[in-house]
Length: 123
Image 1 (cartoon, rainbow, N blue to C red):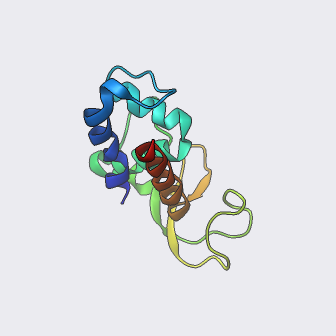
Image 2: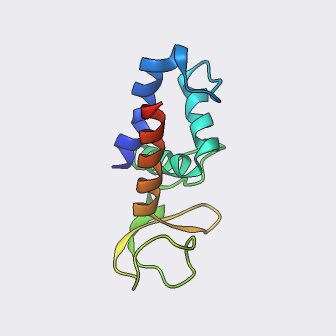
């Protein structure tokens, strides 16, 4: 899932690079991905998850997830992730832990990035 959501940027930029939505200034794919991550931090995390599982370790300065082992199946207790996200009762799920120790529900990141793409593609 992370790979698909992250690589939509490649197809989107290839298709609309000359006519990006209002607010995007990127002249190349690398800058476009950086802009997406700035405007939608969940996209940046999804991109890092995808890249870390491809390369095992990332040395990109902007990476917030730099090692594939930071994404694993686990559970989270009350208050361990952003308020209002994830499932009640802490069932097993995919958990993303950033370099600074913050935990994120992978499912919430996916929903946020999916919504971002739906909004971009509908404009």
